[in-house]
Image (cartoon, rainbow, N blue to C red; front, side, top):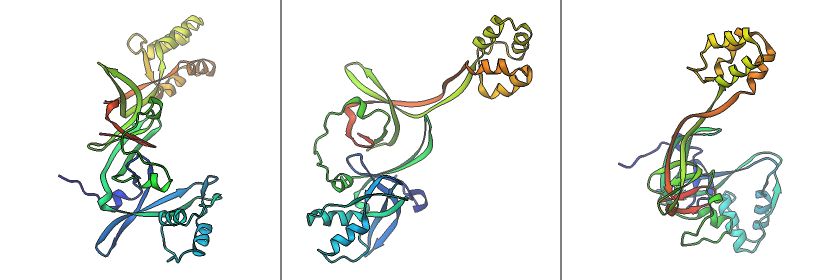
Amino acid sequence: MKRFYSMDELRDAMILDSEGLIYGYVEDLRIEDEKVSLAAYTVFRVNEPAIDVEKLRSQLAKRVSLKGNEPLEVLVSIARRENIDVPYKITEKEVRWIKGFVPLEEVRLIDAKRISVDDMDTTLRVILLSKPREALFRGMSVQSSSPTYRTEQVLNKLVLSTSRGILGICKEIVVGPGALGFRVYRVKSMRKVVNWIAFTAHVKRLGLRDAYEKLVEFRDPYKYSKLDLSTAGEVEKILGDSKILDTMRSFIEAEAASTEFEDVPYSDILKVGEVVITK
């Protein structure tokens, strides 16, 4: 059954074109003369080169008649048609513009999934389009066939399947019988632990017998080779010795807490832009 979404669920969702390029983000729904479209916005960040929209409007007004409410995509298209160079400037503050209106007929897929990989822990919402809108906006050539991509072009990018939606983040290259693939994680969380067996052995080697006995009584290192870092407060109460606690910091490690992944054949890649699109 086809899934439907409210505007509260879609607002600020990432819009991707068919080339895997970020077109913009959902602002709102527009219904005009029975035609339904998604209003998409783009954001120019502080100190980044951005289109000087006001200057562009001024230049275009000398050549063509403008309504005054044209989205950015239309202004850039007119500028190219009129052979006008699109002016840029370095932004002094964050600026948000309506970029264009995407007909629902161009929407190929909508999906939302929670991704928890490395420093990312959020619910991603994406809309995949059937047309290369962002590629055309940037003036890029569009290839009809799927080119060959290098492995480094795929790693650490969001992977989106045209049939199954958001898969996760590509983190590793894998191999199978006669085939190359990539491992995509939906969950790859890490936690900090104390290498307890190594730390207590170190304290013993230092000749700190009293401290060693207290630590072993707290947690037997042969039963608990590693302890969650959250126990550090309890260790501090037991020892009350800042020098030993400073030593313990060198035995803190990061290890995988939980993982959810799937392996995807490299041959399934359709397009790679800012996002990887697969079958």
